[in-house]
Length: 377
Image 1 (spheres, rainbow, N blue to C red):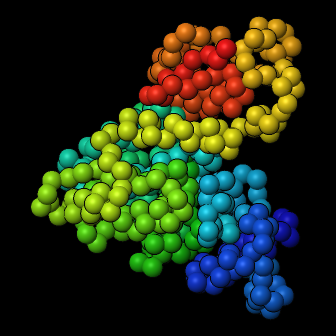
Image 2 (image 1 turned 90 degrees about the vertical axis):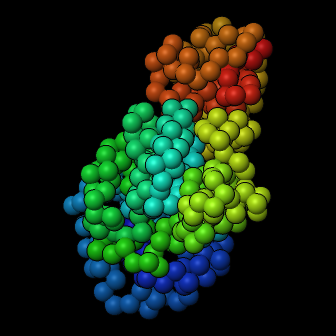
Image 3 (image 1 turned 180 degrees about the vertical axis):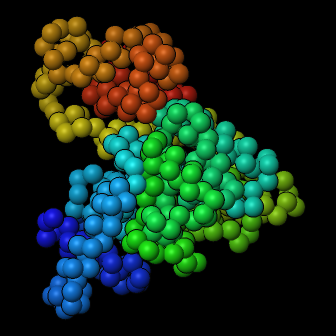
């Protein structure tokens, strides 16, 4: 067990109960990828016995079967790291993949109507089926339907908790959390043993919003906590969508108010796929493996800015097997949708979209409106 891991775990134990102090330290940190600047020596700031406490906490995570990611880890989510106040440490039950950089939050009322539940599930199915990871908070109502929609279509979903991993809330969602851990991940910044206190949920909401390119509020009453998530997303410059609802319906007062304040109308997954398309090249840079971020000079690794040499052995040596397979199946004269490409390539939706976007960064693929793709050249 490294001393760095112990320090991060100890720091998180100290700051989890004091978000105000965490925000002040984050604001003073010169480099968000480095450990937060402590106001005094580690021993004085963390208190006596901090090494033993941190070691015990990491052992609890190991026994639970969870991993731990810190701000210093390369695998820490890039969008969250770039935000103003990222958690110094995340407990991860399941797996985070690089394709999870393509994430959209689906949130809303715990007291969802049947109509809202259906909208949330269909929205999550459409997003997950197109390769996006659906992020939500495991709450009753809209959150749970968003997770279920992603799971049912074989997509990925992330659940962010306002408690420790051993204190799943609500308790009836323990099976849902286990399913998410097998097809995505359950995340929290709160140490083991931490209960779901009311003050934890605004903290959880910032993680939901900042993991995601956009936040969609499906249903929300005037005082819904999902409106806090929308505000936090807007504060970080992320897109905010709202599903319009009937005038006079209590569960739609919050979403209709968001629309009046300038949120984007969401009628379904197609609206998000079309609107977010220009941002997906940047997402591909976040997803791309080392050495495949599109910054190489033409000719390096065999990948130039056109398809003129793609048939040559030298060009093909610079591409992965998945990239070559997709290029061979992409027409040069018309666009093809991701569903058809998934059929002919055999790639799951997340890997398919990530690979397409890597090829777009390399200049080998063009993206057309409606999330359709064709070969460049």
